[in-house]
Length: 234
Image 1 (spheres, one colour):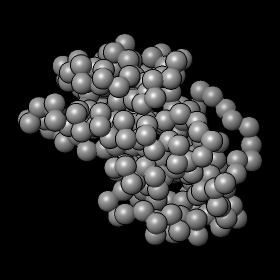
Image 2 (image 1 turned 180 degrees about the vertical axis):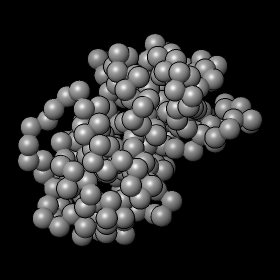
Image 3 (image 1 turned 120 degrees about the vertical axis):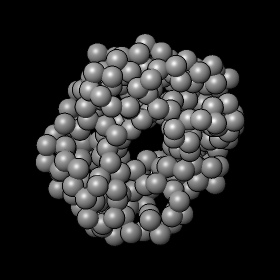
């Protein structure tokens, strides 16, 4: 069970920040959260907001924008027909899992005159029907993406399978770390941005993820408390 203090978001942020190394980026997973809740985590010292849905991200950015240097990450599944909106909204898209999606992101990034930072989503446990590139396929997948002039690969992201206990996800985080190391070794030395982000771990597993090499953790419930309204899509 996740230990949270839902009525004191600032205290939750301080507690999590005290438990993770300074080198690890805390991404506040803001799915279904209100503007006020997101403003509270920003005021408490969070600098990165992760959104699952474009509609919610657009709503948040209208109210918060880039205040205080906040960075916006897409951490949910992204459909190709929403690539243009995503490029306009996010500093980092963590869930690139197909060449067709990458082509659309590259095309819209070119039209907007930007280079879009991305992570490759890894299906570390090779779960059927789940999004993500399979272990062993990351390097050839990355090589195709490296041919796209307006995408910049910054690392890997994985969800890992749902498990009965957080400790049971450790082997899949190790798979992700192995693929991450292989990707870094295969990257051209002339790459403009080093491949340095390994995004894995959530509220119940972030400490294990950090043990296994995560440089970024995506935490929602342990910061905000339980969700109190229905999820929306978009």
